[in-house]
Every structure is written in structure tokens, then in C-alpha cells.
Image (cartoon, rainbow, N blue to C red; front, side, top):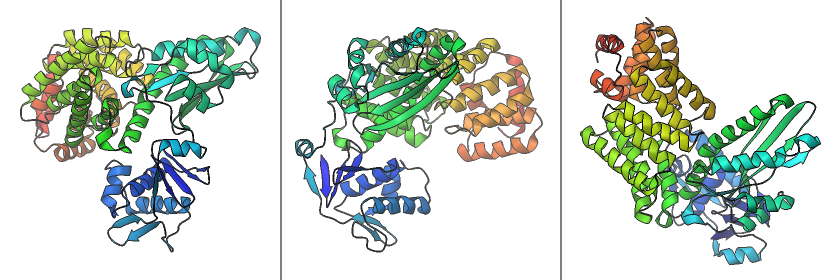
Length: 516
């Protein structure tokens, strides 16, 4: 469906605005705002609705909303004085004014628009990895233009949520690699990964671009450089860096597209990706929304293993964070949903990950370690799997294994949604080792990372108290009471049932000293 008004066409599926067939380039938030206003043109849209739709409910200032409204007006030839397109209803909200014509995809194509490529695999995102374009490569290194994409394809094939077009198909379109439309149509790929490899001087440089073939937008890009004599290390670094980037950027883009669609028409994978977005906010309200999305995904496709694993994750959080009055039942549900996910797809790293974490809840870290090792063997670039392995090693007091797994996880995914946990486990391990100064630094870092919950603040409190940083400890005590007024030391040890009794005694003494 494409909306037309005046000289403008707005395509919500392709996430694109054009004027007289020329694309109008806009910030994603401005385009999302415009789509929301047009979709709801039959009534006034409040500021609260705009915040919920464009910023997903995050705290936003009136100045930010006004700035995006101003940009949207400029994009469609309007201004705050005329308000011929976007009218301000003072003190209440905004309304889209012009008459809008709905056009079918067929009509849009006849006017020079290319329809989006078909959505294959039941909504599962698909990606085509093209051979790299070579610029000034010496003959002995020319093979890297094919070798590195081949290694990327092999690594991505381990990601069960992503359909990877086979090398035999993608490497046949190298001569049209610059034409994303042609590539995506020929290969039916929703995403296209292209690259340029060059060897200026005695270095190798690889530039990577991930494009959304529906919107023709670049959603991620990066450039990696290394000396020629470190080319093997560079090859490995490209693969691990790319996999972690795609783990973050494709689900985020999928969720963004799904939010702009009719919610009644979302398929299983769209609901799954929206659920992931809520899941990683680690609040009671978002966990409930994530649970609802995963349940909708299962209703649409009962055999979607990842949705069952997602339900296990939400039940795990209910038990781990004490979001429910019955954490024992939540722990049982976490195990039950993980078992169903594994029954449907035993090779899914996420399902193995969620299964492993259920054994934290039953204080069986040795069994947890086996499942988490299986998750990382299925996907050696699975950052969250290494984080969970580090957590398990921390419970048993195996510091070398914990620190090694934490370093691997951080190297694979430096901006991971569980980054607060990566830092928090390091702080907890340092507390157990008696290095309180270092623990306090990592505890502060963990507790100030987005997504950090009250248990992470409790780690920061303990570490700062033991390091005799009393003012900072007092700040974390107040933060804990604000986040969870009824927090107790028992919650801490239920979440972190460490086996080393001497450090447990010291931690409990410190928590009691602060009133927990």
C-alpha cells in the first residue's frame, strides 16, 4: 500500500517518501512520525501516541517532538505558519490534513516504483552475501574477495533465525553487485551484504555495507583495516564483528518495520522480533509485552522454536528478577518452554541458551554449563552464550574461565543488550576474589549501563561498600530502593547462588549493613 497526497508518495513498507518520483531523504524518526500521522489521518494524534509509536514509549522532551514535527513539515513543503499538511491542535496534538489516495503495489510499480521483493521463509529475514568488489588488489591477495564472503556465509548459516542465500547463487551476480534492486529481486533477499576490499600500501582494508532491499537504505556499515601480514587475523575479525553486528541490527530493523505495519497482519517472525525489542528492556511492563508478542508468534506458527525460547526467557526473568509472586512456577515455565523450543529445533543456539539458564534457577550450574557450551559450539560467535558461560563459571568460582568467557563475549558484541550483565559478572567475580577496588569500578560501570536492573545495583552497592567508597554505596542503596522497594539479601543470593561460602558471608554482611 502506498499513500499519495499532492506531489508526494509515502510507502510505509519500503519506509520511503518521494516527491515527483524523487526520493526525499529523512531521518528514520521523522519518517516514522509522518507514517504514523498519515495512517491515523482520520483523527488527531496526541503527543503520547507519537511517543509510543516513534520512540516506543521512552521519555522524550517536547522540544524533541517539535523538532521532528518541524522536519516532517519541511519534507512535505509545509511550515508552522501555513500548517496546510500537519496541523497543530494546541495543547493536544497534531493532525494530517490533505486528502490521501491509497495505491496498490501494482499501481505504484506502473509509475516507476519497484515493488519490494517477496517475503520468503514464512517471514524469516533472508540475506545475500555478495563477493567483494576489489580495488587495487595485488594478485596474490585477490582470492580474498571471494574467500571472506564465503567465510561470512558459513558463519551466518549458524544463525537459525536468518535465511542465508547459498554461495552458488550469490556469487553468480557479482557483475550486478551495485544494483541492489536487481540483486534482491533475483535472489529474493530482504537484506544484501556487499563489500569493497582494497590493499593501499602494505595494508588490507575491507568496507562492509548491509542494505535493506525494501527501503534501499544502508542500515549498518563499517570499515576494518589491518597490515598485510595480519590478513588471517583480519579475516577472523571481520566474521566475528559482522555476525555480532547483524545479531543487533537486523532484529532491530525487523522490529521497526513491524511496528509500522498493521498489528493485526503481523506474522510469527514479526511478532518474534517485536518481542525481542521489549525483552531486552528488562522491566516488568516490557517483559509482559514481550511475553504477549511471543505468544502471538506461536499462535501464528506453533512450530517456531525461537518464540518458545523467547517465552522461556520471559519466564526466566520473572523468576530471576522476582517479577512474580510465584518465582518457582516461573522457573518451571522457563524450563518447559525451553524444552519445547529444543524439541522443535535442537540445533538452535538461542533455545540451548535458554535451556542452560533455567539450571541457574535450580542451582545446578554444572548442568547449565553443558547446555551453554552446546550453544556456543553451535554458534562460535554467540556473544550471549559466552556471557552465560561466564556467569556459570562465576557461580562455581572458576575465575579464569569466567574472565576468558567475558572477554570473548565483549569482543564479539561490545554493545550487547546484556552488556550490563557482562560487566556485572566481572564485578561479582572480583568481589569473590577480594579485589574490591576493581570490583567497585566494574560494578559502577555495570549499574549505569542501559537495561541494568536492581540486582546489578546490588552488586555495585556491595563492591563499593567493601571498597569503603561509602558515598557511592549510599547512592546505589537509594537506587535499589527506588527500583525495587522490597529488595532483600535473599533476592541477591537467589540470583547469584555462588558456591564460595567465605565471600557469600562477606557479601551478606555488607548487604545487612545497608539494610537489606
